[in-house]
Image (cartoon, rainbow, N blue to C red; front, side):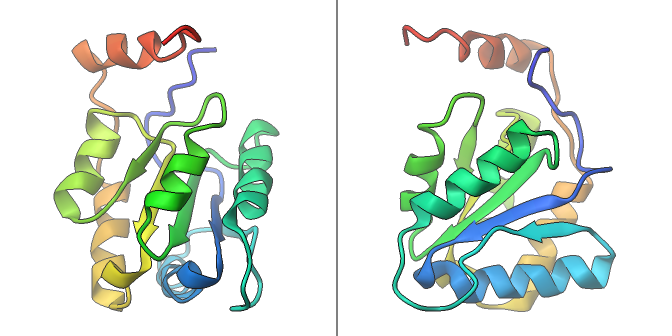
Length: 156
């Protein structure tokens, strides 16, 4: 198994956040609902102080079990969920701070976890734009495929 998912499609998108990413997660949920895209909200279920690690673990377990192929994670800066997610084997997390980073994280980096800073995604229109980009792009493969395969080397 080469751990490359070419395009968003058949499986639900996993969502996870801490308290500081809760509102952005809720905005993305509404956009996904409007588009008829299935998702699973792994939490946090409330905007109370919590740690994202537990919710990321749950979402990653869903991916490993084949329930979902992609995960959206949210915290205040996006950096925390990004660093935490990248600690899990088979996860390639990318920080998505604008349209270009969203597109390239798919086309060139074959990301399967997308980290969103809440402060940049409190506007529903921005969430809609990102979802459109993700639906309309896929991994380019080619020279980028070699890089992705090299990431499997545990000695990096």
